[in-house]
Amino acid sequence: MDYNLWGALLMAFVICAVSGPFFIPALTRLKFGQSIRECGPKEHMKKSGTPTMGGLMMLLAIVVATMFWSKLTPEIMIALVLTLGHGVIGFIDDFIKVVLKRNLGLTARQKLLMQFFLAGLYLFYLETTPGHDFSVWIPGTGYTVDLGIGYYLFAFLLLVGTTNAVNLTDGLDGLASSVTVPVALAFSYVAVALGHNDLGIFGMTLVGSCLGFLIFNRYPAKVFMGDTGSLALGGGIAAIALLTKTELLLVIVGGVYVIEALSVIIQVTYFKKTGGKRIFLFFPLHHHFELGGWNETKVVTVFAFVSLCLSMLGIVLLLLGNAGGRGL
Image (cartoon, rainbow, N blue to C red; front, side, top):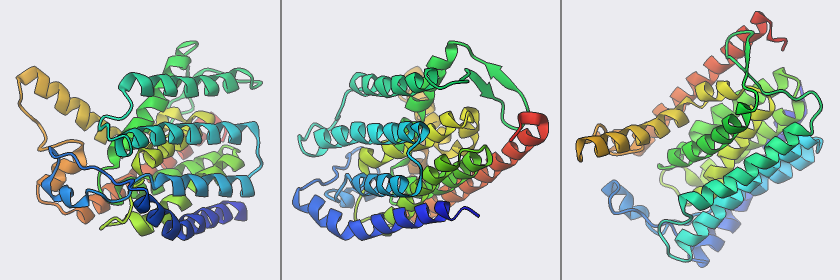
């Protein structure tokens, strides 16, 4: 047993749990309160003014615990860059919305440009790493598909898609953290199984930070992670998938993120094509169930359970891939 894994989890948990009583009052004094969309579920209006940008607590926990328990290899450094980089994008977005009172925050183009830069850093790392390849493993098999230069676009889409999907999932008290815990656990296992022990440690800091944050973010939430936290979590999860070459496994393990994002795409497309008709009561999907009569706690519990099941399926597919000759 590698005690560094559990040490990293515990340290990240403690840092997040201990920093909460300091961060939350500070965010309140600075009036970094969440604004609630009037078009959303009416029950959420009472959450207006709840401190946001709590993702700063999570970033602190992730960085300190990772630097303490893992070797600062180039692989770990790029994982931290992708996590912190997306956290910075989220912080800027939160700052514009909360402090400057511009509800839309960063424009889509501004976000994409920043994410393109971060994807470029990853691809530069890949190009300068001996023995790199542009193949993608097919989960559950021993086969890979060489994308050639198409891998550049694939990696960019994976980063953008994952970070934005996690961001969409962060819509109920405790939802994003609860869904991410089993995902990060699964990818920590994947990393260790494939010989990336330090990435496994990094993954466990994601788990610990989410668990520590849940102390304050579970219903009724005392603080929200904001885009600062959700984009950072997405960047961290995507980093592990990219660096372990298990990109397509993320589509399965992170299936809840995928479904949440698809619900938005389907609703918007259907709305435009039909002149205002809707498939879901509201989007993303968690709001559909909420407006259908489920309370927040039930939605979070069910979504977290589905995430756990998908994470276990991902591990099974990894083991099948090993049996199929992937060479784990």
